[in-house]
Image (cartoon, rainbow, N blue to C red; front, side, top):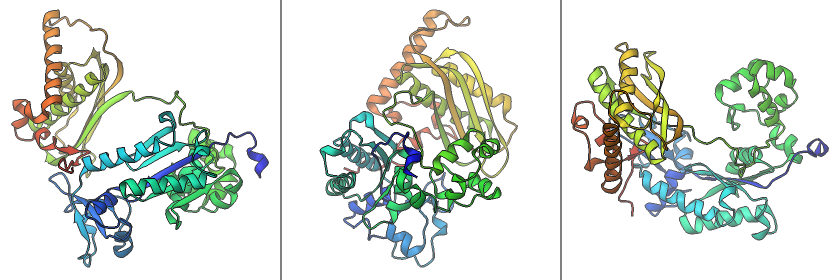
Length: 431
């Protein structure tokens, strides 16, 4: 078996997850042990149904009350959950602690070998550096765990592998259930560690729909997948079929420091509205607010857009639409707002709306300006200066210190959401 992988590059990859991150941070703030405290983080507000969203659940809360790891509704709590500590989210605090943890990781790897996958998970390519910190990668992993816990109080789970996929699966499947919170997978252990996995939807990059499609052709485990005809997988799944086949053999040739990774090619924002909107005037107010926020983002990155995309919909119906239009390159709020509104007016059929997204893509550097036949160059320059002035004032004094009158109209959400992070309470006073 080992000869099969002789041509595969072997790296030393750590996948590190902060256990029940939001709940663990809150436990420490309440002077509780993150592993022993029964605590959940609950987001409430007008745009959250079911009494509130459970964003995070501590390990003890999962054990005592059968709660799930993923987001669930407060209404789903068992009736006997009287001793459960429920706290509101403080997103800025979580971002602060996440920054502390990743700064610890930077003590072990060069920044180019660190990939921050999410607010609670990172990948470290330790290939060039692990020997500086211990006798074996396992020793180094335990050292990192201890340092993170000593400095932040957060427990971490580590997966070690010869590549990103092996490390991630080692963390998810084995590390989280180990007494040391460390799991390992290597090419030599693929038959013993990968192939017995029979809950395919628990494997990184295999979702529920893909798992069901695999089951329909008789694939119940990674062993089945590894020994299925790869050409048949490609015929049935396209490019993904080949990727699934490689995954089942533990093969992943991606490198964290590879500078050819695609960069972000669009900027956008989305909102879940506090209620179902049915009036065009109220929907347009929110569309303008989001458009201005995204326009400010592309100006901050010194970019212009040639592609405007608008999506409006409702999670309970088939109503709404997803449309885009090409425009002359610009980052002016007035022009982009009008393009967004024009798309809405041309495509909305009167459906009730609960979800809104605005994205600007096909970006270009902001080092030129296309003249507008309907405005003088002086007028264009004045509006660009006005946009940048507004951006700088909001950056210095806060968004709510300078808002348009339309943001006080019925349906507007920008002022209400100004203190939120990721749609949840920022908890700015955490320090």
